[in-house]
Length: 503
Image (cartoon, rainbow, N blue to C red; front, side):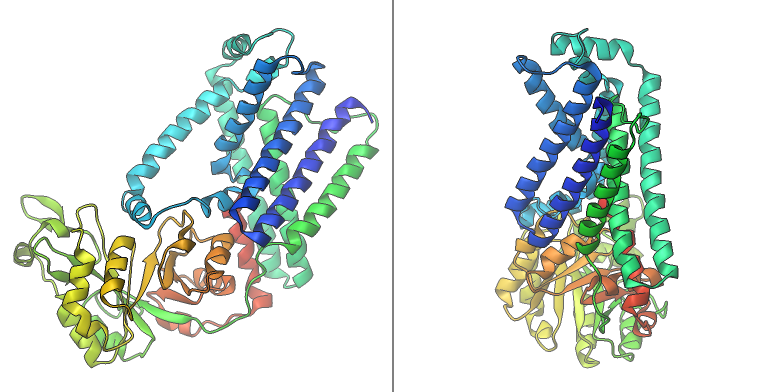
C-alpha cells in the first residue's frame, strides 16, 4: 500500500473507533466510560492527524519534546473547539455528564441568555483566531520551522483573514451537508416504513456524519486525504469494511423508539386549544370540564410575599417600564393590571377536583425563603388533591418538600445541560426541543417520570411519545388525546434527533 493511501485507511479506522466508543457510552452511561472514550477519541484523532502530517512532510516529532507537547495540546484544543459541532457525536454525552449542584443549575438557567451570548461571542472569536493560524501544525512538521514559535510565525505570515473566512464558510457547508443528510434519511424512512431500513439508516448517518466531520477537520489542518492513487483496492476495501462496521454498530446502538402507550396529558397554563386566557380561574373552570389528569399553571411572588397567577417575570408599571414582579408590591401591580391570587385559583381547583402542576417562577431577586413561605401558606390546599409543584428553582423545591413531604416536586429544564439525574426530585419537566435520547435514557434510568414541554405541534407530540416520555405539557390537549402512534410508521422522527448529535 502506498504511503499516500495510508491516511485514508486511518480515517476509516478512526470512524469505526468513534462508532464503537459511542455504542459503549450509550450502553453503560458511566462517567468513567465517558472519560475512557474521550481519551480514546483524542488519542485516535491525534494519531490520525500525526500520520497525515508525517506522511506529508516525512518528518516526525521524535527527539523534539517541546514540539510533541505542543502537538498534544493542539489536539486537545481542537477537540474543545469541535464541541459545538458535536465532537463526532460525543458532545451530547459530555453535556449530560457535567456535574451541577441544584443551586448551580438554577443560577445557570435563570441567567442562560446572557451566559449563552457571552459564551458564543468568546467561542466565535477563538474559532476565528484558530482558523487564522490553521496551518500551524503543518509548519510544526515542516523543515522550515524547527521550533513551535517559528511555526506560529509562519502560520501567521502565510495565513490571511480571507483564508479564515473561507474556512468559516467550509464549516457552514459541513453543517449544511450533515443536516441535509439527516433530513433526507429521515424523509426516506417516513415514506418507507421498514425496520431494517431504519437500522441501516442509523448506521449510514453515524458513518456519513462522522466522515464529513473528520474529512473537513483534516482539510482545515491542511492535511490532504485523497483517493487519487494508483492502487485503489486498499482504500476501497477500507471504505467498505469501515462502512459495514459503522453501519452495524451505529444501527444497532442508540434509541429505537418505545412501544405506543398513553401519554399523561398536562394542560399548559390551563388552556385547551385557545379556549381562554392562560393562568386564569375562568380558563381553569372551563378546562377542568375536560377531565385531563393535570392542569399546569404559573405563579409569581410579589415583593410583599403575595403569590399571584402569572407566567412572565415582568410587569409593566407606567413611568418605570417593565419591572420584575418579585420587586413590586401587589397593590402597585393591581393599580395597572388585573391579577388573580393563587389562593383563589387553588381553592377553585380543589372545588372542581382538578389536580394542578404549579410552576413556581424564580428570578435572581427571588426571596431566599420563598419555597418555605409558599408551603406554609398553602399546605392545607395542596394536600387535598394530588397536586404537584415544579420549578427551575431547585433550592425552593427542596424547601417545599421539607414542609410537605407527601407533595411531589419536579425540576423544570430549559437547556437540558448537566447531570441532573442526581438531583433529589420526583419528576422532570424537560424542554422538548433540546431533549436528547441519551439524556432521556440517563434520567429514565433513575425510574422517575419525565414530561416534555411545550408540545403543541403534531410532529413534536409524536417525537416525544416515540422517545418514550411519560407525559406532555401542551396547549393542544385535545389533539394530543386523539393522537394515534404507530411505532413502525412514526419512529422515523427519531432520526431527526441526530441533528442534535452532530450539529
